Length: 397
Length: 149
Image (tube, rainbow over all chains, first blue to last red; front, top):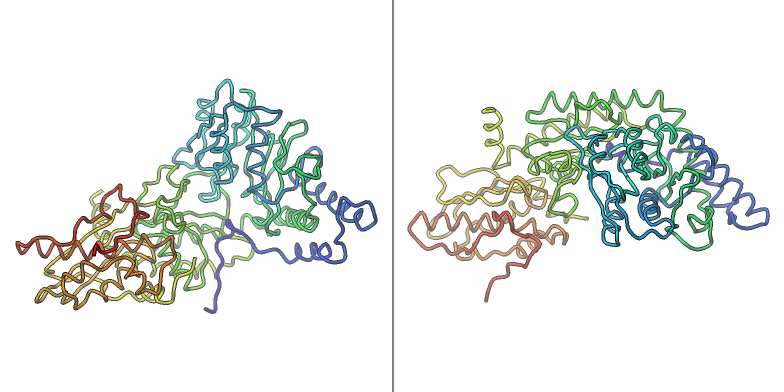
């Protein structure tokens, strides 16, 4: 295989070389423990707190102390859901999450449901958005926490967070958002969005894996999820990952500096792929294509009459990396809960294909992907016992 | 999750793809809701599988197991062909990842359905037993279909 075309940036990104360069000293000569009092420790502490200040500023936080560094998006989500719901020793209450959250939110919500809390899932509509009136209808007197993701990782729709946060607050609840797919990629300001807590992941923005952050508005009580030495103002124990923080801060700075030029380029590349795929393949559609509030780098197709994993394997043989929401790709029986939540019929959700672009995607990559995808789909359809029927049903309207 | 070279070979270059015209027996199994459907057509000569072709909508494993089962069944007596198990299919492919074992049930079921279709059409008793994979409530992670000795 001579060519690798990576189109799965929503899954993870390579570490930017400038990020790597910024991190390197903290693995070797600047290896101190940020809790130590001597010079080596103070150096690490200073670098860590400097990273916190930069990250806080880039998300519009009022105080650096509102940023808690964590091991990644999953830890941030788990901490927010369980830590905010159980803050102050609370043992019951009502929690609302959207039905198409990442599992890092859905799983702790389910845990809360088994430990004294009641949980409501609000479904997105077919436009891939959580509508404020639907959240309003789910609110209860005892609602303590609402968690709705900012940008959906599979379909790329951007939720109207400000309106959702206002509803949560009017009902006396806190508002958390999983912003792993949006921080750095679109304008992001915690105060403009009016949120109390937000989760971030470093490896989605060309930073290292195993690092992330939780924004927590000043004065918001939270039960710690990691307990021990009392780091992060007793909110997240564990020896500080200085290299991770430095890398995350640098990655976010680059995202911020490049966003104005990068976002339109990505949108243009995405549209080039969308036009190519929809123009050359019949019975193919783009999920939530009517929705304007969308991330610039994600396109999620439904290609009828094929199964996603088979497509993915054939593309892989051509050096192309993409992802699918088919059941077989994950070893489960049901396809993507996100696609089912937006009303995609199960039999077609198996034929979903997510393409996500990033900093190193070129026009050549986009064209190569489209050129390789078309014959793969045609071949799989020609092998399908159902395709003739699907096509006939479609023509019959 | 890693596939054996043989799985990838049968996935990339599936054998016996298509539909036999004027087939003696046809089996269509699976469920589009679950994402996999398979159709097998056979020609029968002296109670042996003389020719066999398949069409499959499904994942890599579904396609590879469909392909190999057509190779295994060709030339077999009907009795031997209906008793091919999904484990034998997996072994023939040098193994399947545990999470994908269930995908191979489609291949053996398709073959069974085609053979029964032939027998019933010719006024004979079906011999394959229940075809589980077409049942919407079928749990493909369930028990292995080892032949009853």
